[in-house]
Image 1: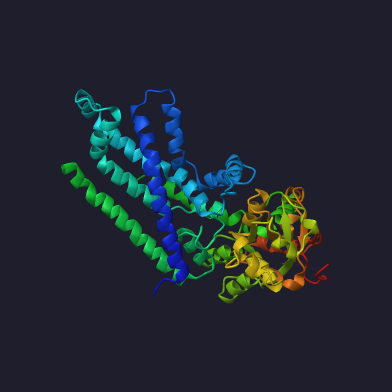
Image 2: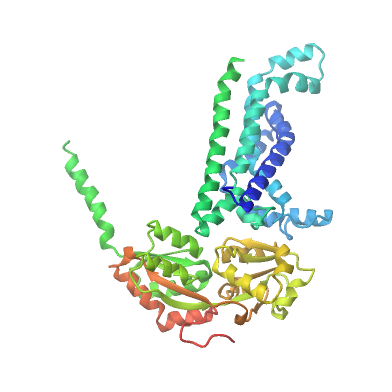
Length: 225
Length: 256
């Protein structure tokens, strides 16, 4: 086998992390995106800006704040202590929480675009057919926004896989818990193990290319349909 | 076309300029952060016109970067083996000079580490212990050796978290995310860290010596400033700063 056991462990961990984060963000990001599109509230601007923050902030800033906020003296740290789960840094669920925030715009923004593209008309039609707003959302909006969901899901998954700085800052590099592929590659390079770094980096490169290929190859068909 | 000549002239002037102004970039291991800052400040006081930048990071990364042509004129490594490897491959313009021996300590921001010993790490109240990554960080390697020599490695491994370099490791402890860390003495004696909690010096018979060395790199072969700064490191004031930060200097008695 070309990849060592610890490489495989890192790959499995990364896939697990990205899958869980994508699932959580589908549940959390959908209502946020919907609200951002439909709401006329004054809060729309500030909330939209907060959602987009991770696009702009360097991972070092996010990692630094997360380390303080999730640490034993931070607000989230206090909360987790009261709940009896202990501090989140250096844990898998700490990484999940960090990634949910870090990948949030990659879920919300494609969904927002998809919802906006649907417009008011299908919803008005649904309303005249006496569909409740919730019913209309599930039977009209969701099917129409399917391409948007696919894009958002793929982008979120891929972006979580590509995460590095935040993980390095709050992960503590624990094998099987927080040592994801990007960190594993970094460690190989740092230890001058170029052969191992090459193999794992090639896996990442092929993965990234295939994801983008899927995304771009699939898009035009969606438009035709 | 008539602008071409003046443009070319300006272009070549720009090219020629850096060759005259002397400027050096020093790549220094993260454990030198506070000591080197002080040494550089003192050096600049005596040489106000000289330009000198210091970059702190992991020794292993600097080695790789220098091999790939990084613009560092001096390289102060936390592990003398790295500059030795560079010198062997022709990347050095000087001999590999040992400049200090590092020491490791137990340090805590929340507990009184002065009363600790290696055995205290088994205390169930301590759930996280930060060390630098032993895979590539010199201080991490020594931390692992000390834990193994104390017979505690197997027992403590589940509690360990790994910092990218020694400064990153200290940060895990400083933010309270790890209760204890094994960090460089040179960082623990700095005011910012010393005020937070005490440290306990790990006996140096528990680990191999942390011999640190530097080189002048090939690109600085004819750079007089690089040579002058290297000489300054051996001067009395610089040695005094190094001693203040807990480094044991070559030719002095180790231990205590």
